[in-house]
Length: 157
Image (cartoon, rainbow, N blue to C red; front, side, top):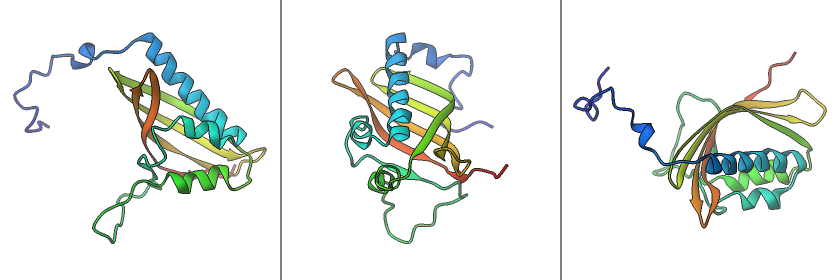
């Protein structure tokens, strides 16, 4: 299939080879991801909050539905407060792990795509899904500028 915006662009050009990135940035992004899972697994909401650009970033579970039903004129995707309450305010001890992590970067912009599992500690009760994180490098530090994720219940074994 040819898309109108790309129909006249040669398909043999490797655009990503022109993107700016470094091993140091990739390591810093991997450290952010490690701090993410550690914060969730230890219930450390204060550290988690430092990973965000601010507490009003777009941050929303899509719940794995084929379409989002929205009954208002705008869709409010700034749902970090819901996540914060569920993860850090619930009193539940959680364990989280990331898999199939893919990092793309061009300068101060990065995107991370990954699969995750979050379980209540010591149980098989929890969920799994796919996350997309957009990151911005500001003042030398990578920050989460948005997060969207699907989530489904873990299958019972």
